[in-house]
Length: 320
Image (cartoon, rainbow, N blue to C red; front, side, top):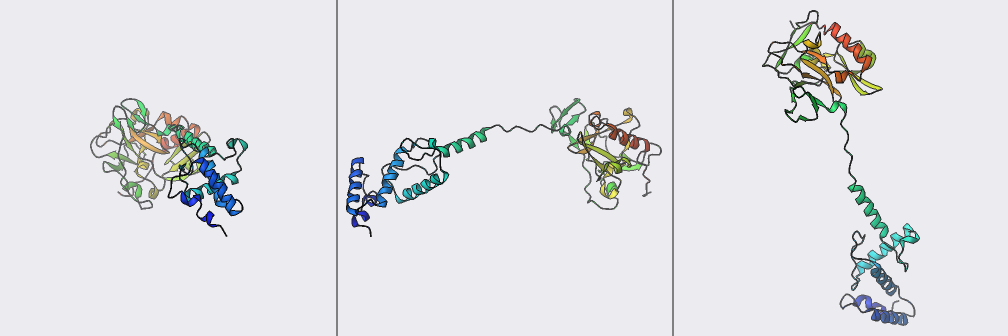
């Protein structure tokens, strides 16, 4: 059972009266020891806490438990201090983590905060754009990302939205400006024609839609394009199935570079067509390939292009 001196000791008096001077605190400590016949746990806690208060540097930022008043130690402060002591004992800090008189330092916590701050300040390296992140301005004869500095953003004519799997889906995805008729190139089946106003240079169509297939299946189709991923990796898209393709499958290859009015190229993992010549009303759309796209693909592209341009899209018009 604690004595009356302990119950009404200096710990309770600090909440109602100014904190005693250092000499007075020592006298109180002596009185507590004499009256209890031994050292009181409460008094010892106050002395230890006073030592920690003396060693802390309030001007430093980043302390874990906030500021502690040197003149008024409350029970809440005592609880926090005991918790902090427990954490420090479990971490078993090294010798250089202590102050000269044995009081644990919070320097380890500050170091962690500083490391995080340094990490946050490190500049984040921006990812370099891939080769197929660029578009090309036919007027400026230069590549750009997002928009040309002179002519602004690229112009796209979007497909008519049709769900995958619909019968005759490819034909139904035609933009309003276009129509499918018999090709002007002999033995080429159907072709795509402009039925609206003149399509200006720089208009984009796509991406080309179809099924992902393996190399062998792509090589046997006139509706396939190859997509470059890396030196040892290529992907193939095949528009043989009309239910999973769009209208671009009907565009025929030009018989020469001079005859072309569209340019096929790879953009962000897909194939787009870009107007490289104005396309007048009633004129057929004829596609060629961009040298920048073909240069990485080698013999695979050469084979596919020869097959496409020689055989054409020999599609029979079943709707006549």
